Image (cartoon, rainbow over all chains, first blue to last red; front, side, top):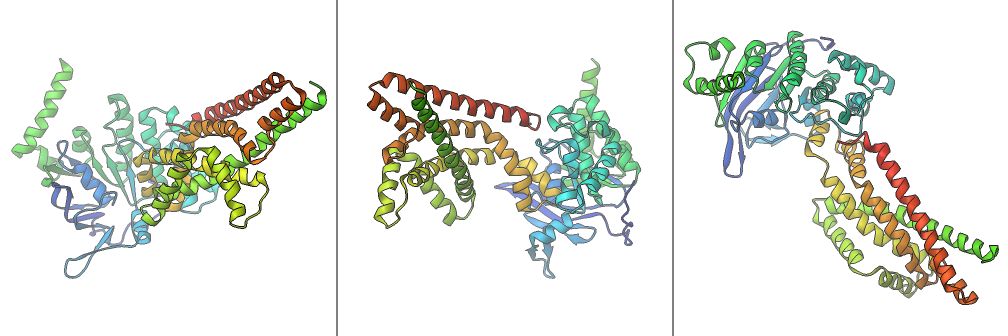
Length: 273
Length: 213
């Protein structure tokens, strides 16, 4: 891990604190009062069936969606809304939101690379425009990040010239370039085939080993079980279970989680037939 | 046709190209502003933009040119007829280009803007670095199309006394009694100009293709 930022002195403050977050789309309550702490320096995986609200929760944490009620803290600093003494929320200024958000990075299911820029251009863009780095310095740093994800020889390629797995690794490099305290992944391998999924998961495994704080929404139960320090299981907008992989996956198993995991066994068995 | 007359036709063709190019350029700038206003959530901006677009798309260009040519002197603005012609062509094409650009901006995938949000680009930086470049690429074929339409529509400005390619052909046809010859030459010139624009557009599309999703 090449991070130069000193680790927060207050290690007992969670990287992310979710307090009483609900999210309503029209009449549907997608999140029904979520409380969650994400520990610093470890990987936390959010799992659950489709429609359980795990992606929405991650997007609320990144403030890409506004929680209907509740607050999000990044290392203790509110993102989006601040909570007053009586529990009333007030919206923070765009500058404040940008300042806190600059400490988190996000990797999307659809990669979301900018198609008119090369891989290196994607990685360097914010370094130049936001961090005001010199183009040459930014490119040195960008190349370092691209080699970290094994793509230094694809720097001049446009996204349309890269495979899905390569695009996602560029997207990871783009997020890493800004040296975030926390990296959020929104189903990063859901649009990749198994082989490409492997190369992306390997990069994520390296990041986890380097001691970064990762929060990963995923359907890759194997990855969650082996890399995740904490697993949070969401079901119907509620945080049903939250614990270590041993606590969740070991016996005795929560019946709803067992039911969910069986669908994976079914699928695994189906591919063997 | 003597060389002198051919020279006159060539000069008029050049006049048509310059007149159209200036109108398209001004129209693109106005079009961008109108598009921005139309996309604004403030009704005080979007309503005038809607009215502008519906007027300049709804009234024939010929009528617009005659209106502008007669309106400007009526309100005390004395301008050469070529200025009236450029104003008319620019405003008309601006309305179409604004709608083309709006389509382009609306087609920029939401996720690309979220990615820009997450790395901290300000709204202005998002516009200039991400949204506008992608929208312009998406709009390029429509803009080339519009440029060709304006090149041909510029023949209408002869009604306000501007001597461009079509008017020159008319004048020479009348004075030499050889209408077929001069209209054929004029048509040939228009074809060559439009092919050139289309070719340039195709080249620009190819050059930016690598950068498209």
